[in-house]
Length: 420
Ligand SMILES: *[C@@H]1O[C@H](CO)[C@@H](O)[C@H](O)[C@H]1NC(C)=O
Ligand SMILES: *[C@@H]1O[C@H](CO)[C@@H](O)[C@H](O)[C@H]1NC(C)=O
Ligand SMILES: *[C@@H]1O[C@H](CO)[C@@H](O)[C@H](O)[C@H]1NC(C)=O
Image 1 (tube, rainbow, N blue to C red):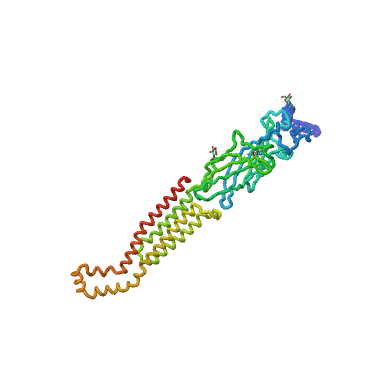
Image 2: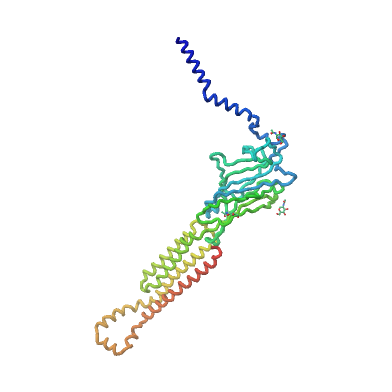
C-alpha cells in the first residue's frame, strides 16, 4: 500500500517537473530563434576588414586613391569653454572631435544592411589613421569614465568615423593693450604631425563643421563670434595641413564699470571736497588728499589682479594714472594754498589783540562811525589779503578740476567707445 502511494506521488512530482514553466519557455524560445540563426552574427575580427593579404596593407601609408591626397573631414562640437586665465594665457574647452576618412583598401565584413557598424577602437592601431594633434594644447585629457570616451564607425562606403571627447587646456595669446575693452581671439588648432599636404589634407565637414553650445557662459567674457579657418603651415620639411576654430571673446565691461571706473571717479570727486574746506584746516585737507591717494592705489592694484605684469601701458592704467595725478594735484593745490596762506600765520596774533581794543573803548567805536571807511582800510591786512588769495585759488580749483576731469574722462570714453 505504502509502495503504491509512493509510486503515485513520484509519478506526480516527475510530471510537475516536466511541466515546469521555465522549461516550457525554453522550448518555445529555442523554436522561435532557430530560423534566425542563419543570419551571420559571428564576431568580427580586424582581419575581416583588412585586406586578405595583410602584407598588402601598410598602416603607415595613407589611402591615396588615384594618387590624390587623402581627405580627412573634421567636425568639432564645443560643449564648453571655461577657465579663461589671463595670468597663464590659457583657456579650457570641452569638445567632441570627429574625423572622417575613406579607406578604399578596407573590406566590408558582410553585406551591411545598416548604414554603419560599430568597430572596436583598438583596431585603429592596426589601421591607417590621421595623425592629427592639437597644436596649441598644453594638456589634453581623455576621459575613461564610465567607458573610454571614443568610438569608431564603419560606413557602408568604407568611410571610417572616429569620434572622441576631450578636455583641452589651450594656450591663447592675449594682448591687453586696451584692457578692459579688449576682445581676445582664442584658437583651437589641429595639425597633421607627419603627413604633408601631398599625402593628406584636412577639411571641414561640408555639412556641419562646427557646433558651439549656445549656453556657454563665461564670467568676464562673452563669446561674440566663432568661425572655422584653415591654418596650413609651410615648414622646411613641407606644407602641413592644419585646421582651426577661432573664438572671439569680448570682455564684458559691467564688472570693470562697477568695480573700477565708478569707484575711481568717486575717489577723485572725493578729493575735491578739500577745496570747500577752509584753508586753515590743514589736518582735514591733508588727510583727505592722502586717504584718496592711498585708496586709489589700492583700486589700481585691484584692477589688474588677474593680469600678468605686462610691460606696456593698458587702457585701465592710463585711466588710473590720470586719476592718481588728479588726486595728487588736489593735494598739491593745498600745498600751494598753504604757501600762499603760510606768511599770514605770523601776523595773526595781533588780530586777537584788536578785540580787547574794541571792547576797551566804546568811544573809539563811535569815532569810527564818524570816520566811515577809515577803519575799514586796516581790516584788509596782508594776512587777510593772503587768505583771500588762497580762497581764490580754491575757488578756481572748484571749477577747474571738475572741468578738466570731465573733459579727460569724456576723451577716454570717446576713444574707447568703438570697443564697447
Ligand atoms: C551579399 O550581397 C550580394 C549581392 O548584393 C549577394 O549576392 C549575396 O548573396 C549577399 N550575401 C549575403 C551573405 O547576404
Ligand atoms: C557660432 O557661429 C555660428 C555661425 O557663425 C552661429 O550661428 C552661432 O550662433 C555661433 N555661436 C555662438 C555661441 O556664438
Ligand atoms: C606649400 O605652399 C606654398 C604656398 O602655400 C606653395 O607655394 C608651395 O609650393 C607648397 N609646397 C609644397 C611642397 O606643396
